[in-house]
Image (tube, rainbow, N blue to C red; front, side, top):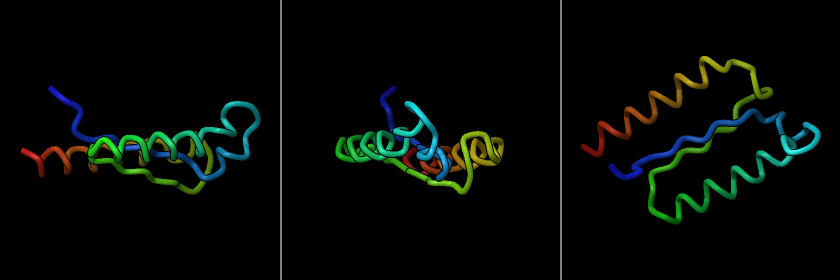
Length: 74
């Protein structure tokens, strides 16, 4: 099976972290753009908060988006 869709989700406060976490938003944005150029259905969501805030809800949104995309492509 081939890759059909990717969902990226970050907190908008992550870029203010020290070290590598401070680069995660910029690097994820670059990866998102690269994946889009490969004609892969992609979603990038920047959520309010930090890395661990509302993690369950964020995961649920990602799963919902991926299942919706999968259903739309079959």
